[in-house]
Length: 202
Image (cartoon, rainbow, N blue to C red):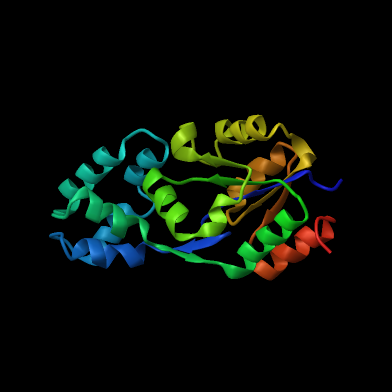
């Protein structure tokens, strides 16, 4: 079956990211090292709470200040915290090719509002999707069932109508368990070849 829609994870699929970029900038106005800042932020319970909507950006900022001694303003923190992304041109081109073919596309991401605001400003391609499912708005992160249900409800699609690309095997497995067609991203060229094989592109 040729999928009706294509659903993209964001980080490591369309945009690369690295908290090592933000860590020294935050550490420059903090009382701990860049390595300690990175450890404090990257894939921690704190970030999980923020990215599931359990705390506001103000609360997140205040906890970071308490934990690292950061002395910058919230506006300064927002700029350096979110500026960790670089484009993955081959994947952005793949998305553009799908749009030219009239294929509806969606963003499906574990993320936070500071990151989303920055990406909207910095990456024009991000405006060209039919819908967006963000963990901080849904109140759940992949691979939790709740966020997959939210995507199905937004798109009106189910099962094999959905093609889903993600770089994490556990997230892909949760989609496959719902009958979605899935691609585990390892290399952009392989992802494009898999999309072509499904009949969405020549």
